[in-house]
Length: 298
Ligand SMILES: [Cu+2]
Image (cartoon, rainbow, N blue to C red; front, top):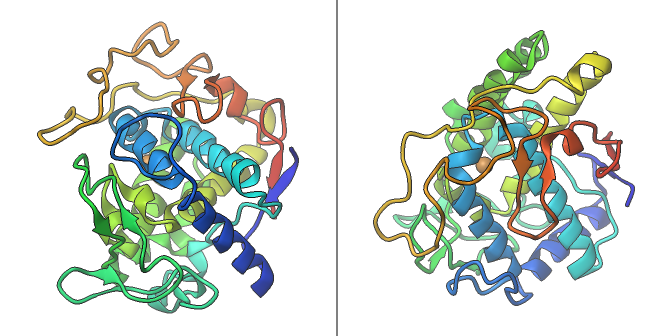
């Protein structure tokens, strides 16, 4: 499937994407990852909860999230007949006026900030969705909540991005992205989005991570022959496992065969989205226009 991923959508394109996301929120769960998941949207969120310790602050951070956004696009198309491009959120455009971003528009966007003590979102197309997964590793029915933080959003500024783009190697590029613009999007939206485990409970997650993927793809394209093979980083990231109240089943961190000879991420590293699409290796996702993937950012 060939598709492009882009930011500037017409009103009709925005509404078509939102309708498709709402469709994933209405389709019954089918992967069997946890009895708590009611919908395909919930199951996507559960995939992230299950894999959080192994896909953050590690070499596979960008590759995993590239596959995860790809799987999201695949399900929008196959489950919900979505034929548009997977949009991204160019957060650098909004870094200085975060809360007035078009993404928070109640009519053509994802609704605005949370309100009251609960911080539940109160307008927009997703205000009535009840998350079954999260917050964190718990599984409790709750609203999608947001708590916009303008200060944290400032790390999405163009100069922060430019600084990351100047990095010569993946070993410095990836932490620059993960700690800078990655943190800015999650922290700037707040609420569910700020939760390391359950952040895909806010549908903004997918536009945020498509944007980070775009940055990686642009950085790769600056020196494609070297950067399509440039991967490194540790395999075990977070110094914690799964805590009390966690109902899913997952092996302890580090016990899943990862395809690497040691604790360094290589092109042979295995990526999984729990069978939403088949397992692949990091090598399979290095080029967005080669082999498995077939998209470009505009
Ligand atoms: Cu993540």
